[in-house]
Length: 358
Ligand code: SAH
Ligand code: SF4
Image 1 (cartoon, rainbow, N blue to C red):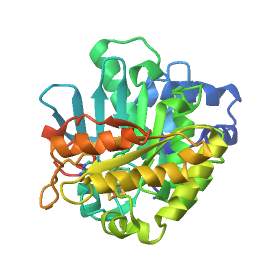
Image 2: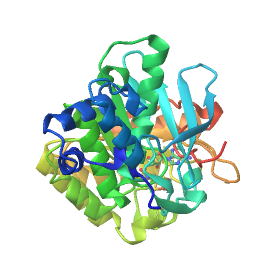
Image 3: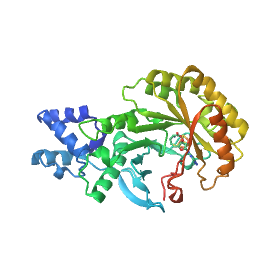
Image 4: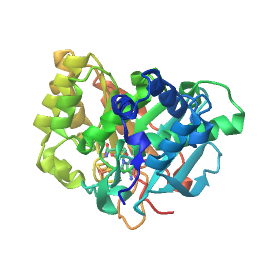
């Protein structure tokens, strides 16, 4: 018997197509979509204004749940929650929820593992199994939205339960473009979840064709590019994909992206002791960004992240002194920077620490 349809894998148009095929009136798609993404139901029987027969038919043909939470972990300060999920085929992924004063951010995975294999990243070291489907990406967000609603007995709309979404969990989103983009459109859809595109940020390690495609999209999600090195020689080692898309190609794609979208790019730079954190490297990074972007009027921002150490890796974070000197040099060259404060490091929920096991 073929497996049931994963309802969250359907676009709005596909859901409407299915319901039309079943002879349902056209307003039904809006109703079901609203139950899924606005009311966040996890059971067909909660769809109160949907006729009983249709609920039964949906239950026979489709399922609503593809993720099963296996374990969770709350950081010491209580503001970061990491959840390990099992997928239907037994693979596992992790997602992270972070509370800030005015934001509630979900960090989603887009792949099981990651094929790029950056040596300082736990995901990269755990190998690659497969891409996630759009439904599997969306459901990570719905899971945390339901948690917040249930904890707070909230009546708010979903976009105030979860205010921000970052594609910075396991995997490289631009190597799973179709599913990632479908998830973005589903969550953005005003008939349902309604999360503004500007509140979503996608992080890439530099998949040039993906950046080019992104710069043509109508929905303007934010873009972060993980740079980590100012020269090809070093970047070839830290980010193996650099051998395919070297810095000149990457920076050209970034420039086109800013020119097409009018949006500034954030560059992520993990500071690794003795590897990429010298003053000379800061100078070179500044020059690279000046020449490729600032001089042609393209704004950018650098987010410095002292490395989160991972088990079994020799790489260590830069000292505070080196990190601050690095930052000062970039600022001296007129580049805006922030130093990221690590979140959830004690529960291995920080950047690059997710490996799909707890
Ligand atoms: N594959 C994408 C998104 C997932 S990683 C990417 O690489 O951009 C999210 C961010 O965490 C990236 O900027 C990545 O470079 C960074 N990162 C990976 N390992 C890290 C570590 N050990 N310490 C700090 N940041 C890390
Ligand atoms: Fe993959 Fe990003 Fe980790 Fe590199 S840093 S291995 S691209 S998840």
